[in-house]
Image (cartoon, rainbow, N blue to C red; front, side, top):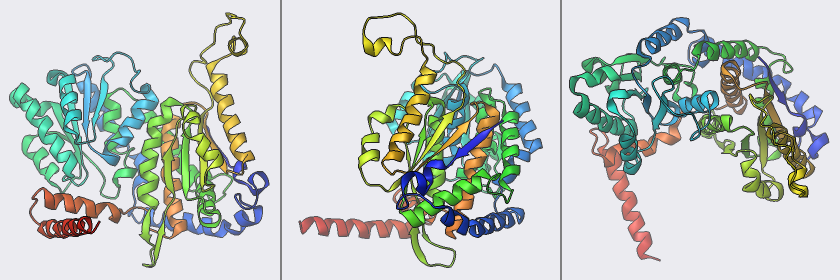
Length: 466
């Protein structure tokens, strides 16, 4: 298993001192990197943050595998009801291991499809229901808090649909992934005897892909979760090393931190050159944004920090975004994600046409072309003073994917330590949730309904003044 991080094009010698990092800048920050490592390790060993320990949860992994084997052949659809970290990880795993949507093979009991209901658009939910057979569907409802409005509302719709079609048998085809000792979803799961898997209290949603949140759907669609965890475990050992040459996640965090704070690179473009990694870019987008976008540091000082993540797909977005990246504001750093090898090179036929544009490619391969496109884009960006780096997975399989997921989570945690922020809270998300609870009439949130009404009054006044 091999993952390689190449930061050469982040250096001043490649993109100039205004946009890149000098050896002195990197060396001078080595102490801060070691402090970040030590600080996070101390918090992890105290039990405050649990994602580093997830790959070693052998009993949980075995329990999930046994359940998946018991249910195998009784369904052709796994319907995940969740949002954010409760949905994006499963989608990323499915895309990477079984192929991107919508070109996966025909689904069946031997190759069940994954349907993820992560939005409350009524047309979307209705179309999903029309596409599924309740007798061949397993519903996995995921919410750590047990009270996420979107998940609860969607699940009430799905639960009613299942009960109307299956009666009391519906409960056998519903399982819950939630906290062990709290929350309304846990109470409902207990009352209705749903099979339940628990999320550790010290693992937040966006860091939960290697917990039952991601492993249960993955196992049900046939992904080898032991290999996922094996790759993540190997990466965890690397991520506790002090040597920046060996600890690539710490090195990546340090360089992105320096480019943000010293060179003004406030945007990071995650640029996978593989459709199989496209879902992972959306998972990463939440991880990086929610973890690092913070108003205050740990001392309470207003900092309004964070690096905005953008997802782009190579080669597709060379034709939709790269013009801006090449000639627009130089406020970005680009992270290319590459597959070292593809399962099928995609041989281009040798048939000649007598036309230069066609014959130049005849007899070559799509793999050679996509790799050439990636390195050419990196070279062009570098020539325009745009810093970039490349993460290369030797191949896209369970071990490499598990390792890359763990790499990104460690990099995020280290970046939070370097920025002196809490990368594991999300206060900026909570106010909107509270307004929603107030508008939907949830008891205890009347204050937020009143605050929203005041907001609406200000809007009407502002509108009248136009």
